[in-house]
Image (cartoon, rainbow, N blue to C red; front, side, top):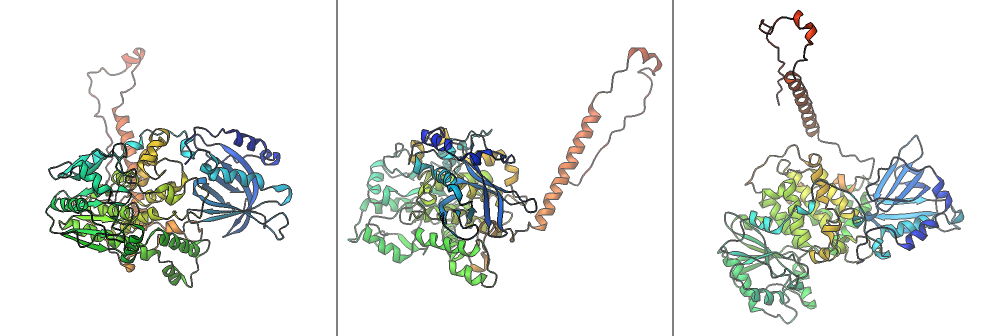
Length: 606
Protein backbone atom coordinates (compact mmCIF):
# COMPACT_ATOMS: atom_id res chain seq x y z
CA UNK A 1 0.00 0.00 0.00
CA UNK A 2 1.11 3.54 -0.66
CA UNK A 3 2.61 5.44 2.20
CA UNK A 4 0.36 8.15 3.62
CA UNK A 5 0.93 11.61 2.17
CA UNK A 6 -0.19 14.82 3.78
CA UNK A 7 -1.55 16.80 0.82
CA UNK A 8 -3.08 16.39 -2.62
CA UNK A 9 -0.34 18.41 -4.25
CA UNK A 10 1.54 15.96 -6.42
CA UNK A 11 2.83 17.48 -9.65
CA UNK A 12 0.90 15.03 -11.78
CA UNK A 13 -2.39 16.07 -10.20
CA UNK A 14 -1.58 19.79 -10.51
CA UNK A 15 -0.81 19.35 -14.21
CA UNK A 16 -4.04 17.44 -14.60
CA UNK A 17 -6.05 20.24 -12.96
CA UNK A 18 -4.50 22.84 -15.25
CA UNK A 19 -5.65 20.85 -18.27
CA UNK A 20 -9.33 20.80 -17.27
CA UNK A 21 -11.56 22.24 -19.97
CA UNK A 22 -12.26 25.93 -19.37
CA UNK A 23 -16.01 25.46 -19.86
CA UNK A 24 -16.23 23.19 -16.82
CA UNK A 25 -14.67 25.86 -14.61
CA UNK A 26 -16.76 28.80 -15.90
CA UNK A 27 -20.06 27.55 -14.48
CA UNK A 28 -21.76 28.97 -11.44
CA UNK A 29 -20.46 26.83 -8.58
CA UNK A 30 -22.62 24.56 -6.46
CA UNK A 31 -22.90 26.77 -3.39
CA UNK A 32 -25.04 24.46 -1.24
CA UNK A 33 -22.31 21.86 -0.75
CA UNK A 34 -20.90 21.85 2.76
CA UNK A 35 -17.30 20.72 2.34
CA UNK A 36 -15.35 19.06 5.13
CA UNK A 37 -12.18 20.70 6.48
CA UNK A 38 -9.45 19.60 4.09
CA UNK A 39 -11.91 18.79 1.30
CA UNK A 40 -11.29 20.61 -1.99
CA UNK A 41 -13.42 20.84 -5.11
CA UNK A 42 -11.56 19.53 -8.14
CA UNK A 43 -13.97 19.62 -11.06
CA UNK A 44 -17.54 20.70 -11.70
CA UNK A 45 -19.52 19.80 -14.81
CA UNK A 46 -22.98 19.86 -16.36
CA UNK A 47 -24.25 16.31 -16.80
CA UNK A 48 -27.42 14.29 -17.13
CA UNK A 49 -28.00 11.82 -14.33
CA UNK A 50 -29.77 8.73 -15.64
CA UNK A 51 -31.97 8.24 -12.60
CA UNK A 52 -33.38 4.69 -12.46
CA UNK A 53 -36.52 5.99 -10.74
CA UNK A 54 -37.29 9.28 -12.52
CA UNK A 55 -35.47 9.03 -15.85
CA UNK A 56 -32.85 11.53 -17.15
CA UNK A 57 -32.26 14.51 -14.85
CA UNK A 58 -30.16 17.52 -15.86
CA UNK A 59 -27.85 19.03 -13.27
CA UNK A 60 -24.32 19.66 -12.13
CA UNK A 61 -21.85 17.24 -10.65
CA UNK A 62 -19.04 18.31 -8.33
CA UNK A 63 -16.10 16.05 -7.67
CA UNK A 64 -13.90 16.78 -4.67
CA UNK A 65 -11.05 14.83 -3.15
CA UNK A 66 -13.69 13.17 -0.91
CA UNK A 67 -17.02 12.92 -2.71
CA UNK A 68 -19.12 13.00 -5.86
CA UNK A 69 -21.99 15.45 -5.40
CA UNK A 70 -24.84 15.92 -7.89
CA UNK A 71 -27.72 18.37 -7.76
CA UNK A 72 -30.48 18.63 -10.35
CA UNK A 73 -31.10 21.98 -12.04
CA UNK A 74 -34.77 21.20 -12.72
CA UNK A 75 -36.91 23.28 -10.37
CA UNK A 76 -39.81 20.83 -10.65
CA UNK A 77 -37.90 17.91 -9.21
CA UNK A 78 -34.97 18.01 -6.81
CA UNK A 79 -32.52 15.13 -7.09
CA UNK A 80 -29.36 15.09 -5.00
CA UNK A 81 -26.56 12.55 -4.72
CA UNK A 82 -23.76 12.66 -2.17
CA UNK A 83 -21.40 9.72 -2.63
CA UNK A 84 -18.06 9.35 -0.82
CA UNK A 85 -15.45 8.38 -3.41
CA UNK A 86 -14.37 5.54 -1.13
CA UNK A 87 -17.74 3.89 -1.77
CA UNK A 88 -16.98 3.63 -5.50
CA UNK A 89 -15.95 0.17 -6.62
CA UNK A 90 -15.74 0.65 -10.38
CA UNK A 91 -15.76 3.50 -12.95
CA UNK A 92 -16.35 2.68 -16.62
CA UNK A 93 -16.88 4.67 -19.79
CA UNK A 94 -20.29 4.22 -21.37
CA UNK A 95 -20.55 4.38 -25.15
CA UNK A 96 -18.08 5.95 -27.58
CA UNK A 97 -17.74 9.02 -29.78
CA UNK A 98 -19.85 7.35 -32.48
CA UNK A 99 -22.55 5.98 -30.15
CA UNK A 100 -26.09 6.51 -31.31
CA UNK A 101 -29.08 7.16 -29.13
CA UNK A 102 -29.92 9.70 -26.49
CA UNK A 103 -27.77 9.70 -23.35
CA UNK A 104 -25.66 6.80 -24.60
CA UNK A 105 -22.31 8.49 -23.92
CA UNK A 106 -21.05 8.96 -20.41
CA UNK A 107 -19.94 7.16 -17.25
CA UNK A 108 -21.10 4.06 -15.38
CA UNK A 109 -20.24 4.00 -11.68
CA UNK A 110 -20.64 0.90 -9.49
CA UNK A 111 -20.74 1.51 -5.74
CA UNK A 112 -20.00 -0.74 -2.77
CA UNK A 113 -23.09 0.46 -0.88
CA UNK A 114 -25.81 -1.24 -2.96
CA UNK A 115 -26.27 1.38 -5.73
CA UNK A 116 -25.05 2.18 -9.22
CA UNK A 117 -24.86 5.60 -10.90
CA UNK A 118 -24.96 6.54 -14.56
CA UNK A 119 -24.18 9.98 -16.01
CA UNK A 120 -24.55 11.08 -19.63
CA UNK A 121 -22.43 13.85 -21.16
CA UNK A 122 -22.21 15.64 -24.50
CA UNK A 123 -20.36 13.61 -27.10
CA UNK A 124 -18.42 16.42 -28.74
CA UNK A 125 -14.94 17.41 -27.63
CA UNK A 126 -14.17 14.40 -25.44
CA UNK A 127 -16.27 15.99 -22.71
CA UNK A 128 -15.96 13.04 -20.33
CA UNK A 129 -12.20 12.64 -20.47
CA UNK A 130 -11.37 15.07 -17.69
CA UNK A 131 -14.16 13.98 -15.35
CA UNK A 132 -13.31 10.29 -15.88
CA UNK A 133 -9.60 10.88 -15.22
CA UNK A 134 -10.24 12.83 -12.02
CA UNK A 135 -12.85 10.40 -10.75
CA UNK A 136 -10.65 7.39 -11.47
CA UNK A 137 -7.62 8.92 -9.74
CA UNK A 138 -9.44 10.18 -6.66
CA UNK A 139 -11.68 7.14 -6.16
CA UNK A 140 -8.65 4.84 -6.31
CA UNK A 141 -5.86 6.92 -4.76
CA UNK A 142 -3.60 4.03 -3.77
CA UNK A 143 -3.35 3.01 -7.42
CA UNK A 144 -2.02 6.50 -8.23
CA UNK A 145 0.33 7.08 -5.27
CA UNK A 146 -2.15 9.48 -3.67
CA UNK A 147 -3.23 9.44 -0.01
CA UNK A 148 -6.55 8.20 1.27
CA UNK A 149 -8.78 11.10 2.34
CA UNK A 150 -8.43 10.11 6.00
CA UNK A 151 -4.86 11.47 5.80
CA UNK A 152 -6.02 14.75 4.22
CA UNK A 153 -9.05 15.73 6.31
CA UNK A 154 -8.55 18.50 8.86
CA UNK A 155 -11.59 17.61 10.99
CA UNK A 156 -11.28 18.28 14.73
CA UNK A 157 -13.37 16.82 17.55
CA UNK A 158 -13.36 17.37 21.30
CA UNK A 159 -12.88 13.69 22.05
CA UNK A 160 -10.11 11.57 20.62
CA UNK A 161 -11.88 8.41 19.45
CA UNK A 162 -8.61 6.48 19.45
CA UNK A 163 -8.83 6.41 23.25
CA UNK A 164 -12.12 4.50 23.25
CA UNK A 165 -10.39 1.11 23.37
CA UNK A 166 -7.36 0.23 25.43
CA UNK A 167 -6.62 -3.48 25.62
CA UNK A 168 -5.46 -3.50 29.24
CA UNK A 169 -8.49 -1.50 30.41
CA UNK A 170 -10.86 -3.94 28.73
CA UNK A 171 -9.07 -6.97 30.16
CA UNK A 172 -9.23 -5.44 33.65
CA UNK A 173 -12.95 -4.80 33.19
CA UNK A 174 -13.31 -8.54 32.59
CA UNK A 175 -11.38 -9.29 35.79
CA UNK A 176 -8.07 -10.20 34.18
CA UNK A 177 -5.38 -11.16 34.91
CA UNK A 178 -6.31 -13.75 37.56
CA UNK A 179 -4.91 -17.02 38.90
CA UNK A 180 -5.93 -18.89 35.73
CA UNK A 181 -5.14 -16.37 32.99
CA UNK A 182 -2.19 -14.06 32.51
CA UNK A 183 -1.32 -11.17 30.20
CA UNK A 184 1.60 -11.63 27.83
CA UNK A 185 3.48 -9.05 25.76
CA UNK A 186 5.30 -11.65 23.69
CA UNK A 187 3.82 -10.03 20.57
CA UNK A 188 4.79 -6.45 21.45
CA UNK A 189 6.82 -6.13 18.23
CA UNK A 190 4.47 -8.38 16.24
CA UNK A 191 7.17 -11.06 16.19
CA UNK A 192 4.95 -13.96 17.26
CA UNK A 193 2.04 -13.08 14.93
CA UNK A 194 1.99 -10.03 12.67
CA UNK A 195 -1.83 -9.96 12.48
CA UNK A 196 -2.52 -10.14 16.23
CA UNK A 197 -2.53 -7.25 18.73
CA UNK A 198 0.38 -6.67 21.09
CA UNK A 199 -1.52 -7.52 24.31
CA UNK A 200 -2.78 -11.10 24.66
CA UNK A 201 -4.44 -13.13 27.43
CA UNK A 202 -3.24 -16.74 27.67
CA UNK A 203 -3.47 -19.61 30.21
CA UNK A 204 -1.55 -18.88 33.41
CA UNK A 205 0.35 -22.18 33.21
CA UNK A 206 1.66 -21.52 29.69
CA UNK A 207 5.25 -20.43 29.14
CA UNK A 208 6.43 -18.06 26.40
CA UNK A 209 8.22 -20.93 24.68
CA UNK A 210 4.95 -22.90 24.66
CA UNK A 211 3.30 -20.03 22.79
CA UNK A 212 6.02 -20.02 20.14
CA UNK A 213 5.69 -23.76 19.57
CA UNK A 214 1.89 -23.52 19.34
CA UNK A 215 2.21 -20.62 16.87
CA UNK A 216 4.25 -22.86 14.56
CA UNK A 217 1.28 -25.26 14.36
CA UNK A 218 -1.49 -22.68 13.82
CA UNK A 219 -2.27 -20.99 10.49
CA UNK A 220 -0.66 -17.52 10.27
CA UNK A 221 0.69 -18.15 13.81
CA UNK A 222 -2.71 -17.12 15.22
CA UNK A 223 -2.55 -19.03 18.51
CA UNK A 224 -5.58 -19.61 20.79
CA UNK A 225 -6.01 -16.50 22.99
CA UNK A 226 -8.78 -15.35 25.30
CA UNK A 227 -11.47 -13.04 23.93
CA UNK A 228 -13.93 -13.05 26.84
CA UNK A 229 -14.36 -14.62 30.28
CA UNK A 230 -17.59 -15.19 32.19
CA UNK A 231 -17.31 -13.44 35.57
CA UNK A 232 -19.28 -16.05 37.52
CA UNK A 233 -18.45 -19.46 36.04
CA UNK A 234 -15.06 -18.44 34.54
CA UNK A 235 -15.88 -20.12 31.20
CA UNK A 236 -14.02 -18.47 28.33
CA UNK A 237 -14.31 -17.73 24.63
CA UNK A 238 -10.95 -18.40 22.98
CA UNK A 239 -10.22 -17.59 19.33
CA UNK A 240 -7.53 -18.80 16.93
CA UNK A 241 -6.93 -20.16 13.42
CA UNK A 242 -6.99 -23.74 12.10
CA UNK A 243 -4.27 -26.23 13.06
CA UNK A 244 -1.74 -27.11 10.35
CA UNK A 245 -2.64 -30.80 10.20
CA UNK A 246 -2.22 -31.31 6.45
CA UNK A 247 -2.87 -34.44 4.41
CA UNK A 248 -0.48 -36.52 6.53
CA UNK A 249 -2.44 -35.79 9.72
CA UNK A 250 0.41 -34.13 11.61
CA UNK A 251 0.17 -33.81 15.40
CA UNK A 252 1.63 -31.28 17.75
CA UNK A 253 1.89 -32.26 21.41
CA UNK A 254 2.42 -28.65 22.47
CA UNK A 255 -0.82 -27.57 20.80
CA UNK A 256 -2.72 -30.46 22.37
CA UNK A 257 -1.32 -29.66 25.80
CA UNK A 258 -2.10 -25.94 25.34
CA UNK A 259 -5.80 -26.67 24.63
CA UNK A 260 -5.83 -28.88 27.72
CA UNK A 261 -4.58 -25.88 29.76
CA UNK A 262 -7.51 -23.84 28.41
CA UNK A 263 -9.94 -26.58 29.44
CA UNK A 264 -8.44 -26.89 32.91
CA UNK A 265 -8.67 -23.13 33.59
CA UNK A 266 -12.29 -23.52 34.72
CA UNK A 267 -12.36 -27.32 34.91
CA UNK A 268 -14.68 -27.65 31.94
CA UNK A 269 -15.44 -31.38 31.43
CA UNK A 270 -14.91 -30.96 27.68
CA UNK A 271 -13.54 -28.08 25.66
CA UNK A 272 -15.96 -27.43 22.79
CA UNK A 273 -14.19 -26.47 19.55
CA UNK A 274 -16.49 -24.60 17.17
CA UNK A 275 -15.15 -24.77 13.62
CA UNK A 276 -17.14 -22.20 11.64
CA UNK A 277 -16.63 -24.02 8.33
CA UNK A 278 -18.71 -26.74 6.71
CA UNK A 279 -16.98 -30.06 7.44
CA UNK A 280 -16.38 -30.62 3.70
CA UNK A 281 -14.41 -27.38 3.48
CA UNK A 282 -12.41 -28.22 6.60
CA UNK A 283 -11.41 -31.57 5.10
CA UNK A 284 -10.54 -29.85 1.80
CA UNK A 285 -8.29 -27.41 3.68
CA UNK A 286 -6.05 -30.36 4.58
CA UNK A 287 -4.88 -30.35 0.97
CA UNK A 288 -3.43 -26.86 1.46
CA UNK A 289 -1.79 -27.71 4.79
CA UNK A 290 -4.67 -26.77 7.08
CA UNK A 291 -7.31 -28.93 8.72
CA UNK A 292 -9.07 -29.39 12.05
CA UNK A 293 -8.60 -30.90 15.50
CA UNK A 294 -8.96 -34.69 15.46
CA UNK A 295 -9.47 -37.38 18.10
CA UNK A 296 -5.95 -36.87 19.41
CA UNK A 297 -7.27 -33.80 21.27
CA UNK A 298 -8.53 -35.47 24.42
CA UNK A 299 -11.34 -33.93 26.47
CA UNK A 300 -12.44 -31.91 23.45
CA UNK A 301 -15.43 -32.09 21.12
CA UNK A 302 -15.51 -30.64 17.61
CA UNK A 303 -18.63 -28.98 16.15
CA UNK A 304 -18.84 -27.69 12.56
CA UNK A 305 -21.15 -24.69 12.08
CA UNK A 306 -21.55 -24.85 8.27
CA UNK A 307 -20.92 -21.16 7.60
CA UNK A 308 -19.79 -20.63 4.01
CA UNK A 309 -16.55 -18.93 2.94
CA UNK A 310 -15.91 -15.36 1.78
CA UNK A 311 -16.51 -16.16 -1.90
CA UNK A 312 -20.00 -17.57 -1.29
CA UNK A 313 -20.89 -14.51 0.81
CA UNK A 314 -19.66 -12.13 -1.90
CA UNK A 315 -21.79 -13.81 -4.57
CA UNK A 316 -24.79 -13.87 -2.25
CA UNK A 317 -24.62 -10.10 -1.73
CA UNK A 318 -24.27 -9.57 -5.49
CA UNK A 319 -27.47 -11.50 -6.03
CA UNK A 320 -29.17 -9.47 -3.33
CA UNK A 321 -28.10 -6.24 -5.00
CA UNK A 322 -29.53 -7.47 -8.30
CA UNK A 323 -32.99 -7.89 -6.80
CA UNK A 324 -33.11 -4.69 -4.74
CA UNK A 325 -31.47 -2.14 -7.06
CA UNK A 326 -32.69 -0.29 -8.94
CA UNK A 327 -36.14 -1.89 -8.80
CA UNK A 328 -37.82 -4.38 -6.53
CA UNK A 329 -39.97 -6.86 -8.39
CA UNK A 330 -43.02 -7.33 -6.19
CA UNK A 331 -44.53 -10.34 -7.96
CA UNK A 332 -41.62 -12.72 -7.22
CA UNK A 333 -40.11 -10.96 -4.21
CA UNK A 334 -40.04 -13.83 -1.74
CA UNK A 335 -38.68 -16.40 -4.20
CA UNK A 336 -36.09 -13.89 -5.47
CA UNK A 337 -34.95 -13.11 -1.93
CA UNK A 338 -34.71 -16.80 -1.11
CA UNK A 339 -32.59 -17.43 -4.20
CA UNK A 340 -29.91 -15.03 -2.92
CA UNK A 341 -29.46 -17.17 0.26
CA UNK A 342 -28.52 -13.96 2.12
CA UNK A 343 -30.89 -14.47 5.05
CA UNK A 344 -29.88 -18.13 5.16
CA UNK A 345 -26.27 -17.07 5.71
CA UNK A 346 -27.36 -14.55 8.36
CA UNK A 347 -29.26 -17.35 10.08
CA UNK A 348 -26.22 -19.67 10.14
CA UNK A 349 -23.93 -16.97 11.56
CA UNK A 350 -26.47 -16.06 14.26
CA UNK A 351 -27.15 -19.71 15.01
CA UNK A 352 -23.43 -20.40 15.48
CA UNK A 353 -23.06 -17.44 17.84
CA UNK A 354 -26.08 -18.61 19.84
CA UNK A 355 -24.46 -22.02 20.30
CA UNK A 356 -21.24 -20.40 21.50
CA UNK A 357 -23.08 -18.12 23.96
CA UNK A 358 -25.21 -21.00 25.25
CA UNK A 359 -22.18 -23.17 25.98
CA UNK A 360 -20.36 -20.40 27.82
CA UNK A 361 -23.41 -19.33 29.87
CA UNK A 362 -23.72 -22.92 31.13
CA UNK A 363 -20.10 -22.96 32.30
CA UNK A 364 -18.33 -24.63 29.36
CA UNK A 365 -15.28 -23.01 27.76
CA UNK A 366 -15.18 -22.84 23.95
CA UNK A 367 -12.57 -22.37 21.24
CA UNK A 368 -13.67 -20.76 17.96
CA UNK A 369 -11.88 -20.75 14.63
CA UNK A 370 -12.45 -20.88 10.87
CA UNK A 371 -9.52 -21.05 8.45
CA UNK A 372 -7.36 -18.08 9.39
CA UNK A 373 -9.46 -16.80 12.28
CA UNK A 374 -10.17 -13.28 11.01
CA UNK A 375 -13.56 -13.55 9.23
CA UNK A 376 -16.15 -16.02 10.49
CA UNK A 377 -14.32 -16.29 13.80
CA UNK A 378 -14.74 -12.54 14.43
CA UNK A 379 -18.45 -12.80 13.54
CA UNK A 380 -19.03 -15.61 16.02
CA UNK A 381 -16.99 -14.30 18.96
CA UNK A 382 -18.31 -10.73 18.75
CA UNK A 383 -21.96 -11.77 18.40
CA UNK A 384 -21.67 -14.25 21.26
CA UNK A 385 -20.06 -11.57 23.44
CA UNK A 386 -22.89 -9.19 22.51
CA UNK A 387 -25.40 -11.79 23.74
CA UNK A 388 -23.49 -12.54 26.96
CA UNK A 389 -22.19 -9.14 28.09
CA UNK A 390 -24.54 -6.15 28.42
CA UNK A 391 -21.56 -3.77 28.41
CA UNK A 392 -21.11 -4.38 24.68
CA UNK A 393 -24.75 -3.40 24.15
CA UNK A 394 -24.04 0.17 25.26
CA UNK A 395 -22.88 2.75 22.73
CA UNK A 396 -19.29 2.89 23.94
CA UNK A 397 -19.20 -0.81 24.71
CA UNK A 398 -20.16 -1.57 21.11
CA UNK A 399 -17.34 0.65 19.90
CA UNK A 400 -14.97 -1.33 22.14
CA UNK A 401 -16.31 -4.63 20.78
CA UNK A 402 -15.61 -3.59 17.17
CA UNK A 403 -12.17 -2.24 18.05
CA UNK A 404 -11.29 -5.39 19.98
CA UNK A 405 -12.68 -8.34 18.04
CA UNK A 406 -12.50 -6.90 14.52
CA UNK A 407 -9.86 -4.21 14.29
CA UNK A 408 -7.20 -5.29 16.79
CA UNK A 409 -7.53 -9.01 16.00
CA UNK A 410 -6.87 -8.44 12.34
CA UNK A 411 -10.03 -8.67 10.26
CA UNK A 412 -8.68 -7.81 6.80
CA UNK A 413 -10.65 -4.62 6.19
CA UNK A 414 -8.36 -3.40 3.41
CA UNK A 415 -8.62 -6.69 1.52
CA UNK A 416 -12.34 -7.27 2.15
CA UNK A 417 -13.40 -3.69 1.30
CA UNK A 418 -10.68 -2.61 -1.14
CA UNK A 419 -10.09 0.92 0.20
CA UNK A 420 -8.63 3.08 -2.57
CA UNK A 421 -7.96 0.03 -4.74
CA UNK A 422 -9.10 -0.10 -8.38
CA UNK A 423 -9.12 -3.91 -8.57
CA UNK A 424 -12.89 -4.37 -8.23
CA UNK A 425 -12.67 -8.06 -9.17
CA UNK A 426 -10.29 -8.91 -6.32
CA UNK A 427 -11.29 -12.32 -4.95
CA UNK A 428 -10.42 -11.20 -1.41
CA UNK A 429 -13.37 -8.81 -1.27
CA UNK A 430 -16.28 -9.97 0.83
CA UNK A 431 -19.07 -8.42 2.97
CA UNK A 432 -18.10 -10.21 6.21
CA UNK A 433 -18.34 -7.11 8.40
CA UNK A 434 -21.61 -6.06 6.72
CA UNK A 435 -23.01 -9.46 7.69
CA UNK A 436 -21.97 -8.90 11.29
CA UNK A 437 -23.72 -5.52 11.43
CA UNK A 438 -26.80 -7.11 9.79
CA UNK A 439 -26.82 -9.76 12.55
CA UNK A 440 -26.60 -7.01 15.18
CA UNK A 441 -29.57 -5.27 13.53
CA UNK A 442 -31.55 -8.54 13.63
CA UNK A 443 -30.85 -8.73 17.36
CA UNK A 444 -31.98 -5.14 17.94
CA UNK A 445 -35.27 -6.00 16.25
CA UNK A 446 -35.80 -8.99 18.54
CA UNK A 447 -34.68 -7.10 21.68
CA UNK A 448 -35.71 -3.46 21.12
CA UNK A 449 -34.94 -2.36 24.72
CA UNK A 450 -31.63 -4.20 25.19
CA UNK A 451 -29.36 -1.92 23.12
CA UNK A 452 -28.38 1.63 24.04
CA UNK A 453 -27.65 2.49 20.40
CA UNK A 454 -30.07 2.70 17.49
CA UNK A 455 -30.18 1.78 13.82
CA UNK A 456 -28.65 5.10 12.82
CA UNK A 457 -25.38 4.10 14.46
CA UNK A 458 -25.28 0.85 12.45
CA UNK A 459 -25.93 2.74 9.20
CA UNK A 460 -23.24 5.31 10.05
CA UNK A 461 -20.71 2.55 10.75
CA UNK A 462 -21.41 0.88 7.40
CA UNK A 463 -21.29 4.18 5.51
CA UNK A 464 -17.84 4.95 6.93
CA UNK A 465 -16.68 1.40 6.44
CA UNK A 466 -16.31 2.52 2.81
CA UNK A 467 -15.89 6.30 2.96
CA UNK A 468 -12.15 6.47 3.86
CA UNK A 469 -12.96 9.63 5.85
CA UNK A 470 -11.77 8.05 9.10
CA UNK A 471 -8.83 5.81 9.86
CA UNK A 472 -10.83 3.30 11.92
CA UNK A 473 -11.33 0.65 9.21
CA UNK A 474 -8.16 1.22 7.18
CA UNK A 475 -5.59 -1.56 6.63
CA UNK A 476 -5.67 -5.23 7.56
CA UNK A 477 -4.16 -5.35 11.04
CA UNK A 478 -2.61 -3.40 13.91
CA UNK A 479 0.96 -3.79 12.64
CA UNK A 480 -0.02 -2.20 9.30
CA UNK A 481 -1.84 0.63 11.12
CA UNK A 482 1.22 1.31 13.23
CA UNK A 483 3.39 1.34 10.11
CA UNK A 484 1.07 3.89 8.45
CA UNK A 485 0.67 5.95 11.63
CA UNK A 486 -3.11 5.73 11.54
CA UNK A 487 -3.64 6.80 15.16
CA UNK A 488 -1.60 9.98 14.83
CA UNK A 489 -2.38 11.01 11.26
CA UNK A 490 -6.10 10.19 10.93
CA UNK A 491 -9.30 10.76 12.90
CA UNK A 492 -11.26 7.90 14.49
CA UNK A 493 -14.89 7.30 13.54
CA UNK A 494 -15.68 7.24 17.27
CA UNK A 495 -14.61 10.90 17.50
CA UNK A 496 -17.55 11.74 15.24
CA UNK A 497 -20.00 9.38 16.96
CA UNK A 498 -19.12 10.47 20.49
CA UNK A 499 -19.35 14.16 19.56
CA UNK A 500 -23.13 13.84 19.07
CA UNK A 501 -24.21 10.72 20.89
CA UNK A 502 -27.85 11.85 21.25
CA UNK A 503 -28.66 11.02 17.62
CA UNK A 504 -27.35 7.47 18.06
CA UNK A 505 -29.24 6.60 21.25
CA UNK A 506 -32.20 4.24 21.50
CA UNK A 507 -35.04 5.93 23.46
CA UNK A 508 -36.37 2.53 24.60
CA UNK A 509 -33.09 1.33 26.10
CA UNK A 510 -33.53 -0.36 29.50
CA UNK A 511 -30.24 -1.38 31.15
CA UNK A 512 -30.31 -4.95 32.47
CA UNK A 513 -26.71 -5.73 33.49
CA UNK A 514 -26.96 -9.49 33.89
CA UNK A 515 -29.34 -10.30 31.08
CA UNK A 516 -28.16 -12.82 28.47
CA UNK A 517 -29.85 -12.41 25.10
CA UNK A 518 -31.14 -15.54 23.39
CA UNK A 519 -32.21 -14.49 19.88
CA UNK A 520 -34.17 -16.83 17.64
CA UNK A 521 -32.19 -17.75 14.51
CA UNK A 522 -35.20 -18.96 12.56
CA UNK A 523 -36.07 -17.80 9.06
CA UNK A 524 -39.51 -16.88 10.42
CA UNK A 525 -37.92 -14.34 12.75
CA UNK A 526 -35.35 -12.87 10.34
CA UNK A 527 -36.11 -10.10 7.87
CA UNK A 528 -34.28 -8.17 5.19
CA UNK A 529 -32.79 -4.94 6.49
CA UNK A 530 -34.76 -2.72 4.11
CA UNK A 531 -33.50 0.61 5.47
CA UNK A 532 -29.97 -0.41 4.51
CA UNK A 533 -30.21 -2.60 1.42
CA UNK A 534 -33.09 -0.75 -0.26
CA UNK A 535 -32.60 2.74 1.14
CA UNK A 536 -31.67 4.27 -2.22
CA UNK A 537 -35.08 3.48 -3.71
CA UNK A 538 -37.30 6.56 -3.11
CA UNK A 539 -40.44 4.44 -3.54
CA UNK A 540 -39.62 2.27 -0.54
CA UNK A 541 -39.52 4.43 2.54
CA UNK A 542 -39.17 2.92 5.98
CA UNK A 543 -41.80 4.42 8.25
CA UNK A 544 -40.68 5.27 11.76
CA UNK A 545 -42.52 3.35 14.45
CA UNK A 546 -45.54 5.42 15.66
CA UNK A 547 -44.62 4.53 19.25
CA UNK A 548 -41.04 5.72 18.76
CA UNK A 549 -42.26 8.87 17.01
CA UNK A 550 -44.63 9.67 19.90
CA UNK A 551 -41.89 8.95 22.43
CA UNK A 552 -39.56 11.40 20.68
CA UNK A 553 -42.32 14.03 20.63
CA UNK A 554 -42.78 13.60 24.38
CA UNK A 555 -39.04 13.93 24.95
CA UNK A 556 -39.03 17.16 22.92
CA UNK A 557 -42.01 18.42 24.95
CA UNK A 558 -40.20 17.57 28.18
CA UNK A 559 -37.13 19.50 27.05
CA UNK A 560 -39.32 22.48 26.16
CA UNK A 561 -40.97 22.48 29.61
CA UNK A 562 -37.65 22.14 31.38
CA UNK A 563 -36.26 25.08 29.40
CA UNK A 564 -39.27 27.23 30.37
CA UNK A 565 -38.86 26.19 33.99
CA UNK A 566 -35.21 27.17 33.93
CA UNK A 567 -36.04 30.56 32.40
CA UNK A 568 -38.69 31.25 35.08
CA UNK A 569 -36.31 30.25 37.86
CA UNK A 570 -33.65 32.55 36.47
CA UNK A 571 -36.10 35.47 36.23
CA UNK A 572 -37.25 34.87 39.83
CA UNK A 573 -33.70 34.78 41.18
CA UNK A 574 -32.46 37.90 39.35
CA UNK A 575 -32.06 41.01 41.64
CA UNK A 576 -34.66 43.79 41.49
CA UNK A 577 -33.59 47.00 39.68
CA UNK A 578 -31.94 49.61 41.94
CA UNK A 579 -34.13 52.70 42.67
CA UNK A 580 -32.50 56.14 42.07
CA UNK A 581 -31.89 58.34 45.17
CA UNK A 582 -34.04 61.16 43.83
CA UNK A 583 -37.12 59.02 44.03
CA UNK A 584 -36.19 57.12 47.14
CA UNK A 585 -38.05 59.60 49.36
CA UNK A 586 -41.26 58.97 47.44
CA UNK A 587 -41.12 55.22 48.03
CA UNK A 588 -42.09 53.42 51.19
CA UNK A 589 -39.24 52.75 53.58
CA UNK A 590 -37.52 49.40 53.50
CA UNK A 591 -39.10 48.65 56.86
CA UNK A 592 -42.62 49.01 55.54
CA UNK A 593 -44.44 45.83 54.77
CA UNK A 594 -44.49 44.63 51.19
CA UNK A 595 -46.76 42.10 49.62
CA UNK A 596 -45.20 38.63 49.49
CA UNK A 597 -43.33 37.95 46.25
CA UNK A 598 -45.20 35.64 43.89
CA UNK A 599 -43.11 32.76 42.51
CA UNK A 600 -44.24 30.76 39.54
CA UNK A 601 -43.78 27.00 39.79
CA UNK A 602 -44.11 24.91 36.67
CA UNK A 603 -44.84 21.24 37.19
CA UNK A 604 -44.66 18.59 34.50
CA UNK A 605 -45.27 14.89 34.41
CA UNK A 606 -41.66 14.24 33.43
